[in-house]
Image (cartoon, rainbow, N blue to C red):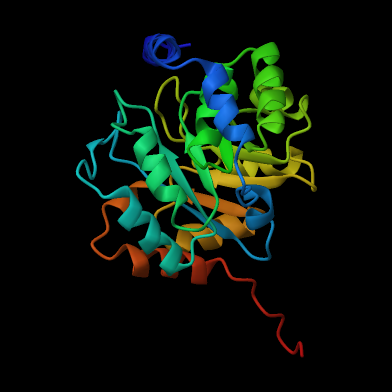
Length: 269
C-alpha cells in the first residue's frame, strides 16, 4: 500500500474520531431509525436496461487538483437528474477531494439514489451516510481487510443501504465476492499508484457474477467510452471529471445516457 493511501486512511480515521467525539453514533442511529421515508435503491436504478450513468459531484482530486471547487452540489445534482442520470455519486472526503456531508445532503434532495463516495473505514461513516439521505456507500477493497469489508457490508444492510464494492484487480475481486455483493465497481485507476489501466474492466468483467451489477469506473469521458463499456458488459458507468468541468452538465449527461441506451436489434418489432 502506498504512502498516499496510507495517509488518506490515517486522516480518515482521525476525522471519524473527531466526529464521534462531537456527536455519538447512538444519536445518528436514532435519527435514521426515525426516518419516515426510505431512499431509493441504487442497485435497482443501475439494473435497468442499458448502461446506466452514475454522475459524480467532485470538487477536486489528488490527480487533477481543483476541478470545480465552488460548485453548488444541489444545483449540479438537479442538472444531472434532468440529464437522465440514474444515480449520483458524491465525494465527501474533505482533504484531498474537498467534499462534505453537506454536499451529500444537497444531492440527496435531487431525486436519484445517491452514493456516498469516501474512504469508508468505520461504521460511523455508514450511519452518517444513511442520516444524510444516501442510498448506498462505497467500500474500497484496497482500503479494507476482509473482516472490515464483511463488517461494513453487514452494517450497511442494517442501515438500509446498498454497497458499491470497488476493486481494481483479480485478488480484490476475490475478496469482494466473499461478501456476496450486489454491485461491484471496477476502478481503472489504482489508488495505490494513481495509474490508469483502461483494460481493467474488460479483464475483470467475466469474473463478476451475472446477478451482480457491474460498474465501470474512471476513464469514462464521452459517449464513445460508454459504448465501449457496454461492449465489455458494463451495467453502469461512473463519470466524474468530465461532468463537473462541463459548462453544460445537463447536455453532457444526456449524451452519455443516450450512448448507453439498449440498441434495437435490426428487424425487431
